[in-house]
Amino acid sequence: MNQPNQKTILVAVTDLFFYTKVRDALRQPDYQLEKARAQQDILDKALSMSPRAIIFNMNDLTVDAFQALEQLKADPRLKDIPTLAFANHEEVETWNRARALGVTKVVSRNEFSARTRELIEEVINNPVGKS
Image (tube, rainbow, N blue to C red; front, side):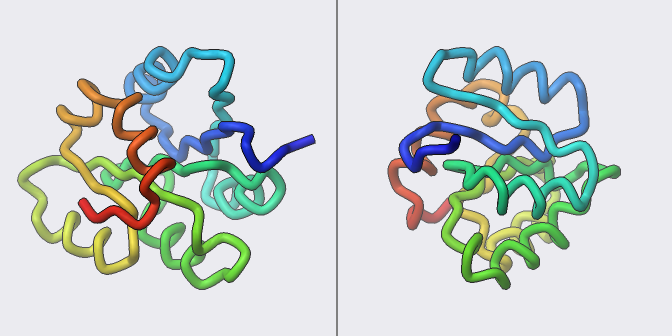
């Protein structure tokens, strides 16, 4: 049973390297990771699990993070879930589009790798913060 204070993090990252980084950074008893392996998993799991935050790889070819953000923000039950996204630092348009869709914070892949735990705690504790 999911309690509101349980730190379940929905990880919409199909890249195994980055998923492993997330898992290693958040490997604490107070974080439980749930992986979204397909597009529909994101909405289904967000609804059923009420995660504390969702992590997106904006460059993922398997999961369309833009579409997922649009769907999350359009659903009153899901629109307030904090989101952390990462993208290649040179992709200005990707960053701007993620911000326009309401992502809580977007960072470079390098920053995400170096500061995963800090960043997830930041979006959970300050969900209205801007990147």
